[in-house]
Length: 66
Image (cartoon, rainbow, N blue to C red; front, side, top):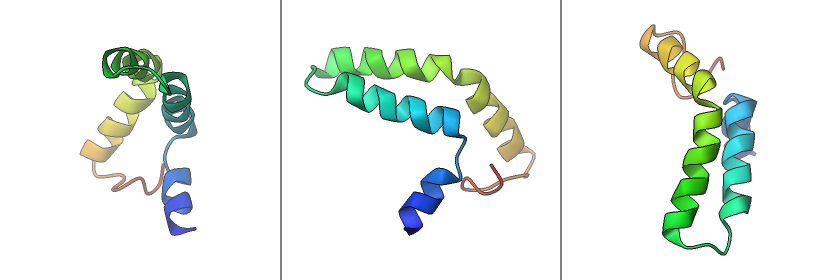
């Protein structure tokens, strides 16, 4: 439950894209898997940038408040 609560505290768009990248990459080689991860990661970059800016401004730490 503790791990689930920590994961749930992160922006759901990025969590869902990470999950999708895992499923899309299953059974594929490392090179193709990394490409899939990059594709999904790039699609949620604005959310990641927003979170990084908030982190830098000391608004959140470790997913708290997101």
